[in-house]
Length: 329
Image (cartoon, rainbow, N blue to C red; front, side, top):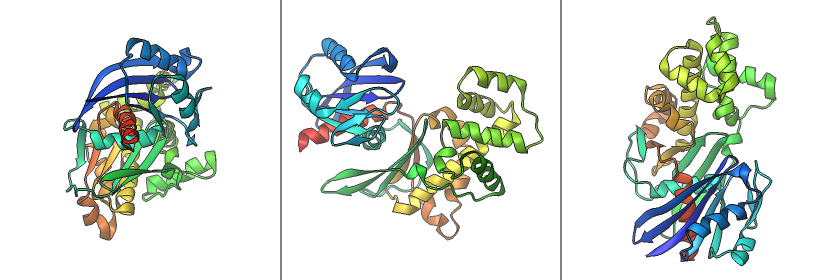
């Protein structure tokens, strides 16, 4: 049995955990959450966690929201610099695998257990086939996995920033609307928390249904994307319903694009925070309409599985997997 330390480091919260690995079984044995803004450095959090859980570890994996260069990261939304070499030299953590948070999420999908996803398109999974991972949340992450040398390797991408390609009259109108705001329009401008809010703004300005005062007031006090999801799924506000319809269809279209791009016979996995909060919408046909409408290649995409990941700690699990890979090298 080997023990690994894992961390999921975000702008709002940090989750630390211990995992025990025996054979193919990965078991989480401890977890603690921290509010990022309450700590001056990540090391402060690490020291606190190790005081409570000081058992020796074989290696440590850290997934961080920010670009990683030469084993070092300046966190995107925090005044923290995380350096793997410094941590190895100063803390009892073994070797440290420092990876981007979405690379960690991609590694995590390889270790999901039955019941930790919802099938959006069943398809047929081919062993060792290419895998595509995308996740709408604060932004839109995308990564690819390819099998070689008896394991999957993650290829991180910035595919969420490629040009948004509208397909319907609604989406063409949305492109024009967003182009006025931003100039160039990427998929992340649509498929993210801010993107869902922007889709709602477009719907309000182009439809005859008046904006509900209750919705406007709620959005002034709470996260706008969460309000749109709540009112849209309840069916109480036609503008929120329409915004969610457009969002889900574009999400499906982009998932289908990735399925085609790498012939993802190993499956397409949706991670990120928005999907699990809108399971009903993603299952009502809107998502599949976008996913499957691929002209001559619709049959090919129909055979490629698409799964919505419901395990909220998939990134933490992937950080542990990164530590396991490091220890095996």
